[in-house]
Image 1 (cartoon, rainbow, N blue to C red):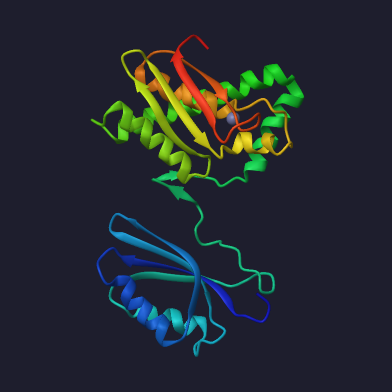
Image 2 (cartoon, protein in one colour):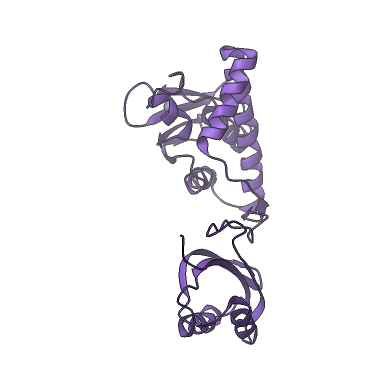
Length: 252
Ligand SMILES: [Zn+2]
């Protein structure tokens, strides 16, 4: 934003009612305009990170920080200025944590490019097997963690949580269409699956999903304690509006 004074702030507050309100009053008083941000409670502390426009503010950032630090519910404040003119890129949130775990954000094209590289090196069929197994291991690991974290939850709910997380992390919008624990069979419908969208757009082979298909197999194998295979019976890269996966007892 050329000509604007854009900065990033990170404020750590006590995790109590009214803490954000007190800071907001100061920001409002100095006409600081917040452009984007995120908040997260971590036990006793509340982290508030935001990008703000100080172009119209009647205060410089150092003094603003001093004013905020005087508030009783504020534990720490820091800010970051653009290192390149007018270009502010978040550098106060590192390391990125999701549910207490160190996480990364990748463009889906980066991930799909990595999978293409595997296929280019070892061949398409062998590559598909490797990618399926990568998914299966990741899915099994995820379900192991969910079972530890959500002790006592029903099996169907654990799968639902795993699928909801995939939506939160940008993979797809997935829902359970069938869940038969006795027969170890399930059906999952996934809309907008990142793996298959690229293929649907003609930027990759229309071979459907390998990673997510394997991921589902890993989730269910860990959930039911029995080897589960998953087939993709419909795929947006071929036709239709969603990818449909069927899980059944298997050996793959
Ligand atoms: Zn698909």
